[in-house]
Amino acid sequence: MSKLTDFISLIDEEVDTSVNVCVPSNLKDYSFEQITVTQQKRLIKGTLSGVKGNIMLLKTFNDIIMANCETDVDFLITDRNAILVQLRIASLGTRVTDDNGNTTSLNEDMIGAYLKEPPITDGRVTYKGIEVQLKTPTLKTDQKFFNLFEDKEYDNAGDVVNDLYAAEAAKFIKSVTIGDTSLASIPPKEAVKLIDNLPLALNVKIVDFVKQAKEYDAMFLKATNKSDIVLSAKLFNAPD
Image 1 (cartoon, one colour):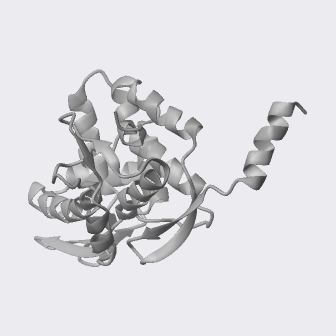
Image 2 (image 1 turned 60 degrees about the horizontal axis):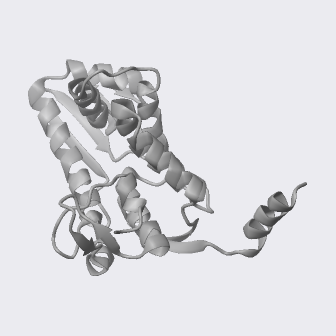
């Protein structure tokens, strides 16, 4: 074994890089390893890989959360931003650059306030005898839907948006009932096909529920100057 390998092993054994992270869905603290340079490189590579890389960026973020948590917990997707922002602050502090190129800070006070209000995780929508039970998906469920895109090639952003729109709604479906007939535990590919065949009026109701979850998640990416910070590889770069 080389001296370098020995030294890297010593880092793993002797240097405590863990940080406590509060998770919104259950208001519990979990121990996480901080994000590594290798993981940062994965994020940058995804950003530079065109349309396909951008669509898979959230999958990479999910992978990092699951790999770095020292407890085997399947968090909700509404936990993602809160976890990542806390890991980012632990590694690089609160100073960030917003999309307009302005240097600002992540709002730690607001993060603390939002953490005290767990997101809505369950819902129910109906339309003309169709009942849909909704549930905010976990990261592992999210990964299964992202896997649908693994072997697909995209030439333009429009195709990406169409696929994401259907998948984002489909992953929230817990069950669908018409009369005495119900579907539950629907596999991702079939869930997307189901979404494509639902009445538009019902799909709008599902999307409204999804928006609530997304709006909650987005609150953790508010800066002190009230600008929105986009979840991207850039978030894990040191500010200029």
